[in-house]
Image (tube, rainbow, N blue to C red; front, side, top):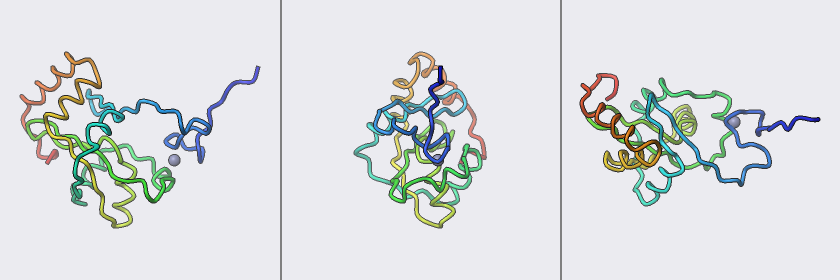
Length: 152
Ligand SMILES: [Zn+2]
């Protein structure tokens, strides 16, 4: 029996699956133990004003992000803004959506804009993205943590 093989555009694992572009799927971003539902984040941030992200902050963040170099150039030119969340106790502002768009903007010297979720919104998003009790535990741990020089 022939196996059903999913093929992605450009043979790239980060590009949409061919024939499945229109099927809405839940998209997640994982950072350490925190799991963010990007689909929900988009809804939460829909009415936010956009903030221009400082290139220096962006390049520091992208050093830690998993970027698939070839995918950077697969994106449509009009791919739009990203979404940043705000962790408590100065633990940082991870970019949970738009990392490849940000990498491209940085390389081309273009401005990159993001909708920034507040601390409260980030906590709310986290509680909707994973087990709420576990989300609260991680949140408390972040609140109690000492800020790290690298996180700023
Ligand atoms: Zn791609």
